[in-house]
Image 1 (cartoon, rainbow, N blue to C red):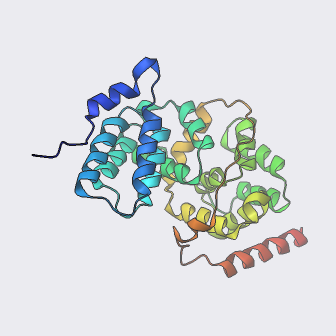
Image 2: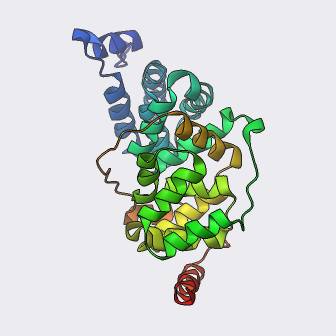
Length: 287
């Protein structure tokens, strides 16, 4: 006698997730993924069940949930290719359709580092190349921003940023006081800053970021990966949507387990960051 299948029909599970008017599909998709990645390997039957269940859910969940699932699976060596492919296609096809500019802005600022990186790299897919505009890296604007950062004056940094980029002062302050650093990377890419200038700004502007050499490694790597088109696309969103003041969003951006998740770029070393810090202090003394 054949053993009855333990697999749950996808339609029944989705109906259950929406019962009583409460949509728990985002939570269900996250929990299924969390359970899946806890085991180092799965049988063919287990993988097939996970793929069917998650593919039946991710089309209807929000972008933040999809980004969280993608971040989790990208760190799992045996992640199902079908799920990753579907998440990639949804991220490429739906940012402009599913999220308004303000929604995407708030999603970006409320997300953790890995989700922010996914948002920025997905913006590259829907960016309009005609909007790209070169900005001299050695211009007066960059020098003024660097000077404010070296003086550890995020308020002055915000004031300069708001006027230069035509964004609200509240948003400029969120960028300057952000404890994770990705917004500053977007600004740096838009303005075409040199890598050493970016490093000095990261080291001095916000002590929460500057005191973590591993975090600066990650941000510098993101700066190398981020395209000018994606940065310009985010700037367009910043310029189009007024932003209300928000309470500070605390982000846990580093732990010991992630130290081996991504290696620093070959051009950025701990000694290099320390040398950049010394250079920044020398610039302060000169002024």
